[in-house]
Each structure stands twice: as structure tokens, then as C-alpha cells.
Length: 277
Image 1 (cartoon, rainbow, N blue to C red):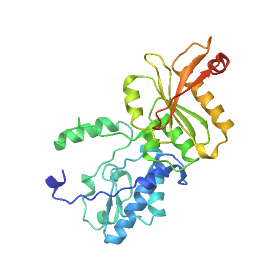
Image 2 (spheres, helix red, strand yellow):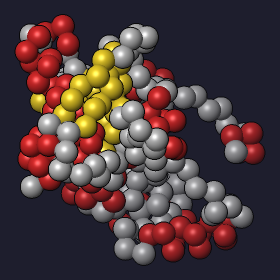
Image 3 (tube, rainbow, N blue to C red):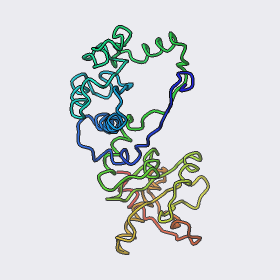
């Protein structure tokens, strides 16, 4: 696309900023803080490179950011009149280039979130763009992932590895910095196997079709008693999520990190009954 348009594309990573997204002040999480991070970095580049205009693909109302919120964000970052949102420009005050006659306002859009997908597809067809190409969606648009992101983000600086753990269906918070991820299907287990760190504990049941658990915790800061209690709770959650009956005890195998030695832990029925109730 860049060669077709005759432009130079430069990618700027914002990974560190996004990993701390839960710490950014602002309402309308996640879209409000996310837009602020993007526009703040773009504003820096605009000033350093002495550019005149910043163009975004934002749509009025998307992520809860209406006209007032978008204009307020521009003003806060010193970008008033310098952010062109072509998809919704007719709903917003003219930018400086429009006022100077450098851009034809009648060629710009008036999209809102209402009927957005259908109108975008229609525009794509008019412009000869393949509307069937679907890119990766934002994980924070999924309410469950967004809640997990906020909860765990308040306890520690998140990593890419940890975010990938939060994508799994079965994630159990067992305390500050203590998380159990349980993979039930073969496909989930393959994905989870790639995410183990040396300090993680692997949990499984010595039976065919066993679930796979990954337990991560600040082991060095925990007493032996705290570790034992956490392992018992994690083993019980593993069994409960996999649907094991709470009527008898089970054995769960534990293997720390890359260790070759496996420990066996007996889980009492009452622990499972407590989770089932």
C-alpha cells in the first residue's frame, strides 16, 4: 500500500507505554487512555519533525469518545486544529489546513459508530479496497480481557508473555502476583507450553486427557507454608476447572520450571467441594 501511494512508512513501537496502560489516568478505559498514548507520541513526532498535520482513523463515538472528548484530547496535547479525522471530519470543527483551503472538506466523511461497519464496507468497495481483509482486533475490546488487564496491571508491570496468558479462557487470580492458567484442550495446551518461564510450576493429573496448569507467583518472597498452601489451592482449581468429581481425593503432579523431578500432591475432596459450591 505504501508503494502504491508513494509514501514512506515508519513504524514506532509503543510497547512499553501500552504495557503500562492500566496506570494512565483518564476515563473511558481502555479507549480513552489508549488514544492519549497514541496522540501524545504522535504530537512529539509532529513537533520534532515540524509536520503540519496529524491524520488518524478515529471515528466519532468509537470507544465512547464523542466530539467533546476528541476535541478535549486535542487541546490537552496542544494539537487543536491539527488533527484530521477523515472518517468523521464533517462532524468536527475544520482543521487549520481545511480553513486554509488546502483540503476539500466536502470530500471528507461523516461516520459515527452507528452503522459503521456497513458504511466502511461500502466505501471500501467504491475505492477498490478489499474489505474482506480482517486485521487483528484489539484485545482490550473484549470485556473479560480488559478487566484482567486492569486487575493484574495494578499489581505489577505487565509483560508480553503475561498478556498472552490473560488470553486463555481459564485464568484464576490466587493473590497479588499469583496466577493460575489452566489449558483444557490440546490446542490450548500447545499454546500454554510455549509460555512457561523458568520459575513457573507445571501442574497436571497423571491421567489421559489431563488438563495443563501454569502457576506463576513471587516464590522468593513466600514462606514455605505460603508456597504449600498456594500449590494446594492451585491444584484444587485445576481439578475443578477440568470437571473432576469432588467426591474423592486426587493426585496432581507438580514440576517447577525446567526441573526434571516431579512432585506429587494429594488434593482432599473438601477442597474441591469448596470450589464447587
